[in-house]
Picture 1 (cartoon, rainbow, N blue to C red):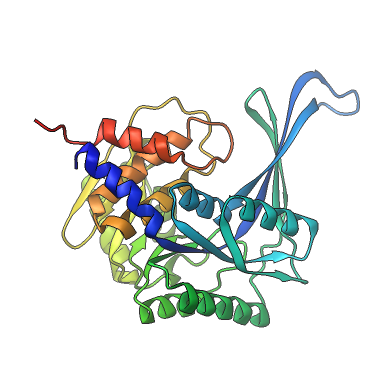
Picture 2: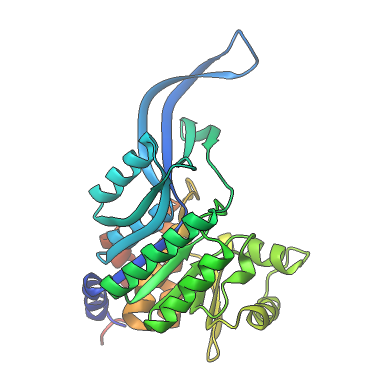
Length: 335
């Protein structure tokens, strides 16, 4: 692709409708300075100077999709609490449709509080429920998703699993079935609990650690041969179309029936890896929905993951910055 074709591709993102279903959460940041140790216990005293709330979990995937210009809706469950209301307000402020979120009386909204001093994480406090949805809540979620698929007719749906209980095995099966009925592409960012429940999806995007853990593979070596063998075992269990495995500092690996490759990471000044996986699945999904080009999907998602790691905390991809990087690193120069 040349620079003009990248411009055209990025413009096409605004015509996409993409759904995100999974565990939503608040990311709360307390910023401060440590100048002394507490006299009450051998712990640092953080003098808090600023507080900030950001969208986390599946919500961060949605905000990355929105940042690229696509029309995005989120389907999920929150608690009927102040944190849930704050999260929905933040989602709406970021042009994310929240019509398909419902509030549960039996759950609380996940809130991860990070305490940071001089760009270093001092502590994280998690307030959450991780039990699976009960049968009534499960049916409500499936009903909400069915309504979304019927009314909005999206091109692609991302299933974002954080092991917080929103995505159950029954729910996953129903959602994938509904997507197939409506010819909706599916992309998955899995976690260990439901790893092998995502059968028949289009894009399966675990990280290398998750693959090794799920397939009981030992050792730290990474090679094309090893990754091909991993893909073989994944395909036997999942029968999916595309494996897209993130390799941390080594880049990404993708494989389909027709092509496969390791794409090395680009050298970056890494500040924080929080939320990088969310950015990768979001960019991969948007690019694939727009282009159906697997190699391009992997290349651009790899660049995007590196870009967000240059900033502290969970941040969404900057569309203009990503476009500039794609032109710089990927565009073919016209003669």
